[in-house]
Amino acid sequence: MSNTTTAAIAADLEKGEEIVVTFVDGSTLEGEFVSINSKGLNFRVEDRLVTRSLAKIESVARPADEDEDDDTEGMTTAELADMFETTARALRVRLRKLGLGVGKGHRYALTDAELALVRSSVEGQPIEE
Image (cartoon, rainbow, N blue to C red):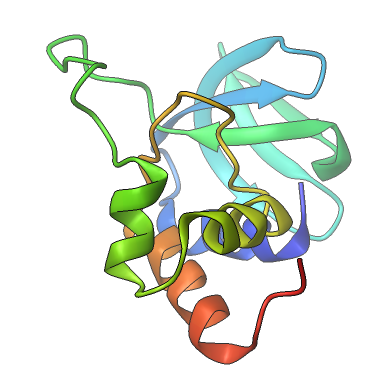
């Protein structure tokens, strides 16, 4: 996980909030957010404080509501690219560099902090393809 993505996560979460941590090996842990720093993510799982290196974390998200329909959640790359007035290809490259890529056929469900990060990235500099 990149430091830029880490900053977006820290800005978006509050202490005690429920999170789902996905690791690079594909495993997941659900817990309660405590803090994040340059060394790792601290969260509580069953009254036990757990610290994991940011390099071993693929993503951090809020648990999905069971009432939500996954087929309608999020935006396609083309829809997101239109929002930022860029091409889908250029946006995919930028999102992968920010650690926000979702893979072929999936939709982007970005938080407000992640959208702000993408917006500043798109407006700040041209992308190298």
